[in-house]
Each structure stands twice: as C-alpha cells, then as structure tokens.
Length: 396
Image 1 (cartoon, rainbow, N blue to C red):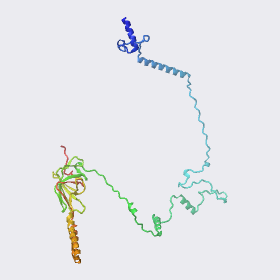
Image 2 (cartoon, rainbow, N blue to C red):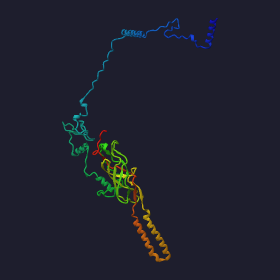
Image 3 (cartoon, rainbow, N blue to C red):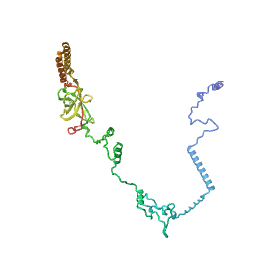
Image 4 (cartoon, rainbow, N blue to C red):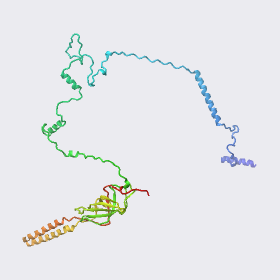
C-alpha cells in the first residue's frame, strides 16, 4: 500500500511540478553514464580515423575523374590559322613631292623648292627656246630688290634707321603731351607719388654663434639695483647702487655678478619743463671678488622704463608768485590813478614794467628731480658682458 501511495503521489507531483526529486537525479560522471536509448548504444569514433577515411575518399574520387577525362578527351591541339599575307604598296619615287632634309635649305624658314616650273601669270605665255627646259625657282635670276625683300622676309630681326637712344621717342611723346615741341624735352618734376614709391633698402644681417654662454650676459638683460646715494638733478653728479641678488649667465648656470656688486654711474642734471625723468648712465661694476667690468648702460626704473623717476619740484610759486604780487600792485595803482586823475600815468607804467621783468627772470627756473637713498632702480644691459677671460669652470 505504501508503494502504491508513493507512486500516486509522484504522479500527482509530476502533473503539478516538473522539478525532479533528488532521488531521480543521476549524479554519476558523464563518462560512466550509459545511453538513455537502449536501442542505440553510445559509441565514439577516433578523429584520426575519420580524417584518414576522408582523405582516402577524396583521392579515389580524383583518380576516377582523371581517368574519365583521359579516356574521353582529345589530346590533339587545335590547328593554328595562318596569318594573311601583307599586300605590297606601290611606291613610285617620282611621286614624292617634298625633298628630304638633306636637300632642304639650312635656314628653317626658307621655302622648299618643289622642282616644278613656275606657273606664269594669266594672259602671258611662257616662251622657251628650242631645247631649253623651263627655269626653276632656284635657277631663275633674282633682281636686287627681290633679293633684298626675300632676305628681309627670312630674317628674324629687321633694323631700321633712327636714334639709338631708347627713351627718345618716349621723351618726345611726353614733351608733346605737356605742350612742348617734340624736339624740346622739358625736365620731369618729381611728385609725391614718386617719393612714396621709393622702397627702403633691405639690409642683411649675418648670423654668428655666441661665445661660451657660461661666461656671458647678453644685451637686453635686466639687472635690479638699490640706490646707495640720493639724487638731486639741480647739479650734475655721480650715483651708485648695490645689486641685491646674484646675476646668472645667459644659460642660467654660472653666477657672474654676485650679490653685493657695486655699480657706479653719473647724471648730467637739469630737467626741462614737462620732463619727469632723469637720464642716468651706469659706467662700471665691481664684484665682491674684485672683478671690474665696463657697463655703459642706461638706468631704468624698477619696471624697466627708461630714465629714473622721482619727486619733481616745479617751483610754481617762486616763478609766478612775484609776478602775481606785482600785478596786484599794478591794479591798485591803476585804481588810485583813476581816482587822482591823469597825473598818475607815470606811476602805473613803472609797476607794469617791473612785473614783466620779474616774470621773465623767474621763467628760467628749471624743475628739479629728487630721489631718495634705498629706492629701487634698474639697469638695462646695452652690450654683451664676457667674463671668459677672468673666470673658469671646475667640477665640485
């Protein structure tokens, strides 16, 4: 009964759920499993044997086809069709009209004689003596005019008589256009357009290698400096500054101007009205090691602008204060003169002349620039500094 109940339960589960039971799963290895179909047993074949059978079958098929083709085929080649014979062309030397190159004239522009008689003009009958053949072009005697005309026709360049100067006709044409006679050529005047058409001459600069860059400070380099002395442009004087940091060579590897290098310069003094910068020329630099070099470069401000700036005194009140005071006195004298009468005419003229004299004297006062000690300036190198004669390189 228990087995029957289990079978019934299994059938009902099969209808509801197709998942197999754990007992129904075959957990044996795949190689050990038998064929599920009892009528067809599981068999395997060696791949090498299959390749051998395929090769043998292919060789057998190829042999059969070759034998069949040899028995039925025709081994004879198709006959070759003969080429048709070329027809011979009739050649008559007398039919050649143009002569060969050997018989032609040396001039490539010369006419080629055809060797036939010249056709006479209409209405004229050529008369020949007995036994005389017609004259050809080469045999006919040419007149001098015809010979000259023929030579001119064959020539590539024909020269005519006239002036040798190439600009004669053009000059005469220009003179005639200006109203002058062709024989009188007026001189040509230069215009603004002629001046503008003149191009500037293009120069040529030759490239050359620089010396050893380990000992070179090239032109255009900037050297900062701090003023050691104050400046006053009212009088010419000298000035000096100290380099606050090391200055390296052109390739940035060697220190050529050490920190503390002293640079000496000079200025001429005197500013004109409207100027706010003073020109200073640096002349020599001395390093802490005792190496001196001629600088010969202008001074700049800390940003590289030309000249040295500073506080500028224009002396405004000194130049115009006295003249203003005299003008006030003149106005007061004028008011008093009008009150007194015509007797004050001499009194008003004297203050006016004095104001003009004072204004003229004070107008010559020039502005003065002052720059304090310790302010930053700069040096724009105007030439190459070469230290190869005083320095050398050695490995540390």
